[in-house]
Image (cartoon, rainbow, N blue to C red):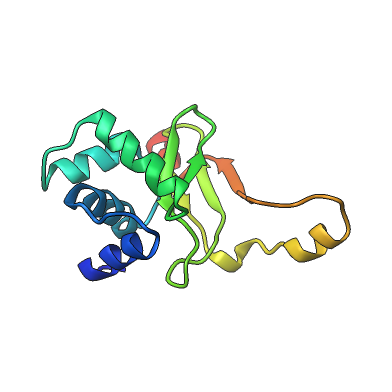
Length: 145
């Protein structure tokens, strides 16, 4: 997704006023190939316009609350933010490097779970699924040699 109007439409269709900062935050997340830490989003937005930490976290909370962005735990007490599942962005598992903390998106079909079957066979309501693989990334393995 790279059309500016797509991000504006996403905001408007979720009853979010499409301010330039909200659009820039959503675009920074949507344009990257992996989930980003707040500091990475801040740097990307600051390359285009001014934003402070409080405003960034308020926007992230709003986007998560509206279901546009997913807040992902990387296991290091710092969240990463990625696009929520849409018709343009399928649900998929993630890989987190336990050395450098980078989070990567994996292929959607890599890990298949039939949520409907699980929900039918239990007395649970599933609201959220996050599949995360943890290990050492290729860059850290190369640096180790």
